[in-house]
Image (tube, rainbow, N blue to C red; front, side, top):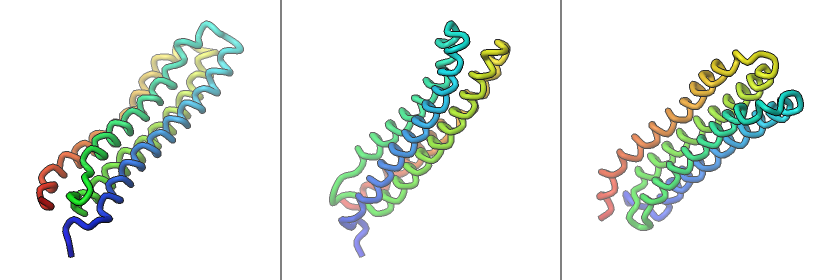
Length: 162
């Protein structure tokens, strides 16, 4: 059995797709959910809309994490010189980044919606909203870090198919 079968790049590109699609789904959900709260806030206090865009911006950053991992993984996939173990590692890296991005986007959306609605009534909520959003964002950052560590482990494996 070959260490570099022709179907090995499938797993690498599945990691690329997982990172990009799942993290973007999380970012889209977070943006939509927080956007609903911002629209509700805008009807009562339109002057607070700009400060309330923080959850939307933080959701967008989650998609950037997936993009970074996708670009790094896709740059490492070389047809006919790509080991199967590298494909599995890249799949794991993409899933790690994608699922943490999905959950972080979900958390940002729920927290952003609730806190923006509370911000209409009490301005002291703003600081706690930002802190909670930072902790939700860090969930996606953890996935990015794990994916980068996993991707760095593949560099020694690439010489198997030379």
